[in-house]
Structure formats: C-alpha cells, structure tokens
Length: 149
Image 1 (cartoon, rainbow, N blue to C red):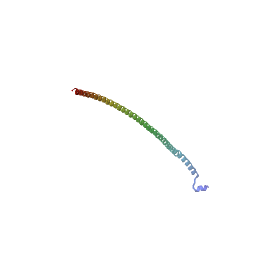
Image 2: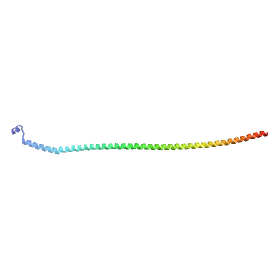
Image 3: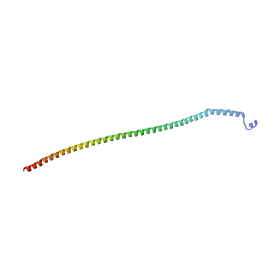
C-alpha cells in the first residue's frame, strides 16, 4: 500500500498539512464570511417579514377605514334625508298657513263686499222709496190740481 501511495505521489505529511490548512481556512471563512452573510440574510428576511406584516396591517387598516367611510357616508345620507323630510314638513306647514291666511283674507274681502253691496242696496232702496214717495206726492198733487181745476 505504501508503494501505491508512493507511486501516485501522495505525501502523508502534506495531506495532513492540507487538512489542517483546509480546517483553518474553513474556520476563518466561517467566522469572517459565512456567519456575517447568514446574519445579513437573516436581517433581510426579518425586514421582508416585517414588510409583509406591515402590509397586512395596512390592508386591515384600509379595510377598517373603508368600513368607517361607508358608515359615515350612510349616516350622512340618512341625516340628509331627515333634513329634507323636515324641510318638506316645514314647507308644507308654511304653505298651509299661507293658504289659510289667504282664505281668511278672501273671506274677509267677500264679507266686506257683501256688506258694502247690502249698504248700496239699502241706500238704493231708500232712494227709490224717496223717489216713489216724491212721485206719489207729485201724482197726488197733479190729481188734486186736475180735480180742483
């Protein structure tokens, strides 16, 4: 076996030194390169996980804001409908009051016109009675004059 090792040019001391060098190099690379690289990758993974978590919480907050917006908008619509209903009731009441006032005023004007018409009628009646009386007196005078003449 020693011959075979010698024929292939394998040196046992050199292999042991190379194994020691490999272990030393692997230890140095692990300490200075592999562990810092793993730390950088872990930090990046944590940042990505935090970003995903923040995005999910932002989505939840957005959904809550949308729900709140819908509630506010529906409340505003309901309040607007109530205001419109109150305004309609107020307008109807005002219109009824104005119509009642106009009807009362029209009734007063009609009563005044009827009263004035009655007064004119009475005056005309009195004047016509006076005229009839004058005419009767004149006719009686004429009849008496004719009888006396």
